[in-house]
Every structure is written in C-alpha cells, then in structure tokens.
Length: 125
Image (cartoon, rainbow, N blue to C red; front, top):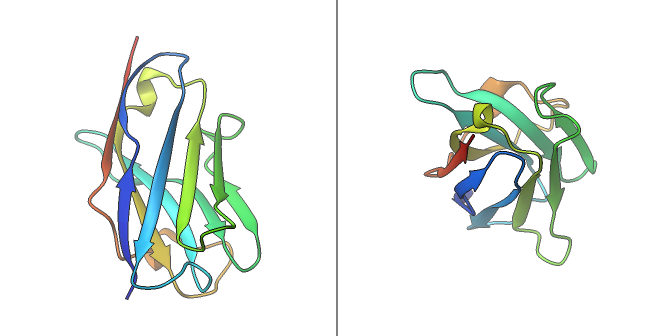
C-alpha cells in the first residue's frame, strides 16, 4: 500500500502563492489517481483536484479552477504537486493527498485512501 507525505504548507497573504508536494513511499504513482483534498475547521473534507497518472488527466473543483494546478514530477514517479496561486482566506485549510487505485476516471471521493498527515495552509487577508 502506498504511503503519502504532504509538505509545503505555510502562512501566506491573500493573493500569494504556495506549492504543495505529495510524496509516496513504498511504490510509484503509476497505478494511481492522486487527489488533493482540504478540510477547514468545522467543515467536511472537500475535493480540490486530482491527477490520473497513467492517463495524464486532471480534474478540478470549481472553486479552484484557474487558480490551482495539479501536476506530476515526470522524473520521479512518486511526487505530485499542487501549485496554488491567487490564494484567498477561503483557501485556509489542512490539505491532504490521497491515492485511488481503482482506475476509475474521474474518481469518486470515496475511492481515495492512504491519506497523508496533511499540511496546513493559512491565508491572511
């Protein structure tokens, strides 16, 4: 089973940018769809973006479309990035990555597992 570790979170002013990383240990991402989700205090975890490694396809939540970009590191089959631009306070949350082995596209939120520990993103106004 793949194990995931998120990094790259931090505190940024509104309008700023951050790049999050999701790194795998144990196996490569080639057989997975990797998804980014986020959870704000008192809220449920929500889908942000996903990338189907084998099909090289991406999918975004409407709330981040045009601002966030999910991408893969082709030199390492074990890293997926989430570039977040034009951040606003509503983007404040703990960001998690998860792995979906089902091969279904697009993935359903319930297809994801192997969650990492999360990385905190805070956007000040």
